[in-house]
Image (cartoon, rainbow, N blue to C red; front, side, top):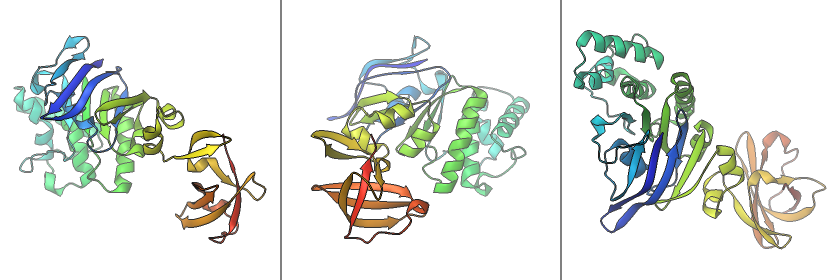
Length: 310
């Protein structure tokens, strides 16, 4: 539905995106994931028309929209800081885009109330923005985008300003809303857990290049390179039976009769889980196990036995 064809963006001597080729399917939620400066927000701004690429094209349903102004393309953007008008009521914020399009007051209110109800803010049309919680303001920002009935909804780190518990709740609500209204979403985040939990597919960017695109399970279990293996879900290199492998902490399984023996160099109790740091044949390993499975906490400095799952 939305396609990037050899898109390159430069800021002076710095190349933010280089020859990006990416296709977003109709009705899917795709996440752009990567560290700061990798090009993910630049990609979103190109999709929304806020940046024109130096090279390449952007297509929407086969139509070239590369140089179409933001207000003329069928996309809507939810920004990181919500970008709500503090002097307007919640409902007037939602209806602002319709007002720009020349929609009358009564119809604007009707459409705004309808979409506010959809995002769980029924009866909040006349609420002042400053009186709303962070989560409610985020819903208003979502409603303001949805009321325009965009073909593609673009979200630029929409949950980064919320606390951890609220972020988890809001990402579930965004996913449920996306499925309920059957809208295509391009979602930017640097949080790998957020990306894995919310996406149909994840596209990992690194240094302006697209490293890998795939289902969350594919990205996690079959990373294309060391960067992705380390960035998504945590991994570390181990030489095992003469071969270099990337191992995740949940693959290292402490067991009294385990195949391998190492020295415990550290232990951290994290609540639901416990992390062990193990030195083995000059290599540093990490093991994460449910804290209830740790029958007797081992002594740091002592030996432990473990297996490594394939």
